[in-house]
Length: 495
Ligand SMILES: *Cc1c(COP(=O)(O)O)cnc(C)c1O
Image (tube, rainbow, N blue to C red; front, side):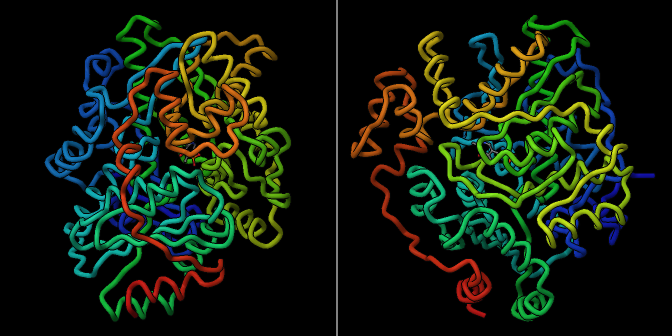
């Protein structure tokens, strides 16, 4: 049977890849999952000789079964081009005994570019394939990085509109400026008076609002999502884990088949889930180390089997990980139940009703490849500082969390397996926190002065993405309460 998509909550089956990408979220509130996880059809040795684009085709094709070879290759060519500041697309740096897989060389200098550079192409291709004549409205909640990367991808793409909701006061200065200076007549940005979970829950609610869907359909609109709940985000993210392993092999850092660990700074659980998919496809990944900041709901989950979001939401120096409801965990839960939609739905209903659920011992046994860890803001800062002083390599606050969690894991377990750290953002995106980690409090010093200081100190050229916002005019000023998102969407769309 050809691979198709089904909802984690059992309500839909046999959905094509292009339909799943167009819809974003299943109608029953579940997330789309492939009916199987295909094995890689090329050997690691072959992959070792491939470019990023060739690897992307080899990895994505078995998932995107209803895209033709020409369609998919065209999407890949348009996505992974000179928008990235390095031909390797995802280069690897070795420092302090760790391999840093740099996923921030795209247009908005965060790892979200890896998938959001291609999602608009996958989506417009899907619209054509399915004869969609309505305008697609991409609704997106962001903890800071998805918003900009999605807008950069969808800006002025014909037949699409994009609306982004971000938590006011919950993102870095650079992140906020990047979003609020976004050009493109089809882009809108709204700051909500709430946190990321409020934004994400609000967006999911709008998706589930059948009256609204009908009203929009009458006016020629339909919703889709650029969040990592969209399978069109997850699939492109698998690529770089396959590529990383193949490059380690090509560079003689490992032997073919040698296991490696992966450590991922985690928020919505999308990036680390992609690493798990890479493992299931055949990449020899041993442990998946899930690194959290002080919002350590995932650490607690992997340690106890109980997911419990009933706790204080903490604003940290790694804001893109300030999340208490990690949406993509639902996909792993689904797999751990043996793809039981009923059971998954029960747990997710418990989560929305009581804020918690507990998995049984069989499910826990399924999860043993995952190790949870967390680092406090002080430990994060200390890691950034030590790594920089010892090696000259500068990481951002999210990557710092991952490195700190990994070092702690290594010390506690004595596990010396080579480890890839997903490096998810450029340090320039979190300039204040990074400079303060290295040099102490910066008081009233202007953000761009800190950026210039960082450049002098590290010798890393200031990325184009940062230069662009230095003088760009602010174009977006919308704000709303967390319960006013529907009204805001209707206002933006003029319905
Ligand atoms: C989004 C993001 C994360 C978290 O990734 P998830 O896929 O949501 O777990 C980590 N670091 C940075 C810089 C991000 O932008």
